[in-house]
Amino acid sequence: MQKGPAVNTTRRRGNSEGFDPVQRADRRCQVHIRHTDEDGSNRRHSVYGSTAKRARNKAAVVRARLRANLPAKDRKITLGEFTSEWVDSALEASDRKATTKNLHSTMARTQINGAKIGARPLGKLRPSQIDGWKVELKDRGLAESSIRTAYTVLRAVLVTAVGERR
Image (cartoon, rainbow, N blue to C red):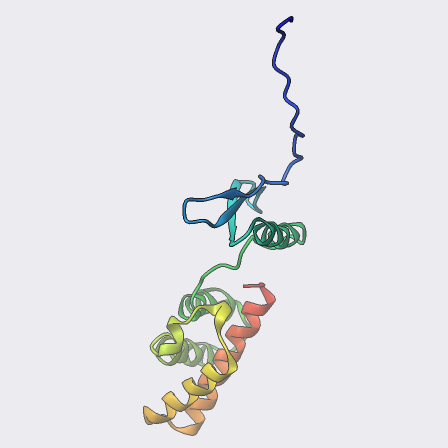
């Protein structure tokens, strides 16, 4: 019997196909997905599932997001952090009068960032939480006109967030 070089019979995966699910010590299955982000950096994203099939399905969802030029997963930014970015960028670039910009900046800082709602993740914000925020503002003793202005600022922040797919 002649001994020759070892032959690898496994199929080579294509780019972005990831790995076969690997079972971890905690019995979950894990799939790694490599991709290049919008900055040109190579990234690796892992998804987990209780079975290999569930891990593959989650990996397929991530790959679909990447093909649609979306991030692998949503960024975990809070409403307060995004509001601060909004004040520095979108509000400053707007054609509103200086007094309106000053009012909206103050409302954003005191009534959104200074409230419980400012600590909530932007992607997990719900209408019921916004209603609770309005009640919180009323309990603080704010006038109805101030609550309306704060709500207008919040609505502008959220419209910008949706436009930027955050």
